[in-house]
Length: 374
Ligand code: SF4
Ligand code: FES
Picture 1 (tube, helix red, strand yellow):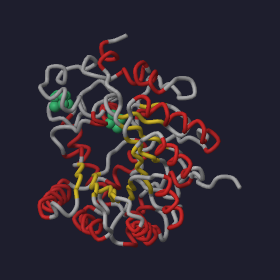
Picture 2 (cartoon, rainbow, N blue to C red):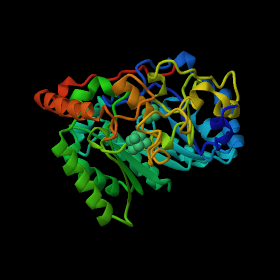
Picture 3 (tube, rainbow, N blue to C red):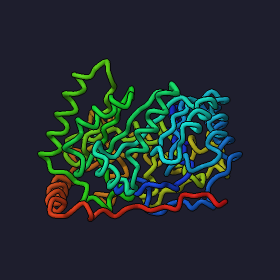
């Protein structure tokens, strides 16, 4: 057993991708290019076993995600099982597929929290970004049903070129919808999103203005709403501690049961992922080659290896390091100490200019079959 294995604490959270099916086509989707087909999805009993194993392992929170988790007809059963196991359940949803009645049943089954994505505060733009007519109106109804049910609501808004001038208004919209928390997260570029990077990339001036606006709202709305602010990577000087550190706090299970250290980990070639059908979650967490590949600090190269921030940001994001340098062991090039940092700034400048010259029609939408067979 490696030192990294013996030191690993239990994960605090499990991100369960119940399905990759989704009614929306968001151009910034960070799920991988190859999605799991409906036929490969774990069944109800298999997911229930995974959640029982998670609870036994020490997981406290389960994030039910996708795709769109409401596309699964057994969502209520799954929530009920998680609640029975004492897990805090957070539903991450586009809202499409939820009705007032279904939200009431989910609440009764023990759902603890809802995280609702909103694409923009202008209806036409929101529907255009989502690639789904009527999505905005529906989401407003879903937000009302969630709060009427007494469930805490978080609004998730991904920020990019088309909505960056309304980052502050998105916060105000979240307040108006009765959310207790809003996540203002600048788009990240892996998975499907990298295909739309030129159409999504804002300019540095737009990014700076949006950051200042949201930071000012943090002060102004303190006590009214909690604002979680994820800054734009390509304009940063130090990277984020992606996933709170690789194999440190969270594990992710795909619709077909592959256990990943992060939702985009499959973009890194050469990693070996174990499946929950073949291994227990505890075994995966302790011994899976993919989880141990970048756990701790032993794998690091310079400049991370001797950096005082190495146990703060863990060298940043492995998926981004691979996407931008072709080597997942490099420091995240978002870091100003990375020899590739200049290239990140150059890409951001070039793409924001190229994006400005294009219309929003340049989006490549993600389309996934969502209905279960009758
Ligand atoms: Fe983080 Fe590595 Fe940059 Fe240090 S050198 S700040 S550990 S990415
Ligand atoms: Fe995979 Fe950051 S998205 S480590």
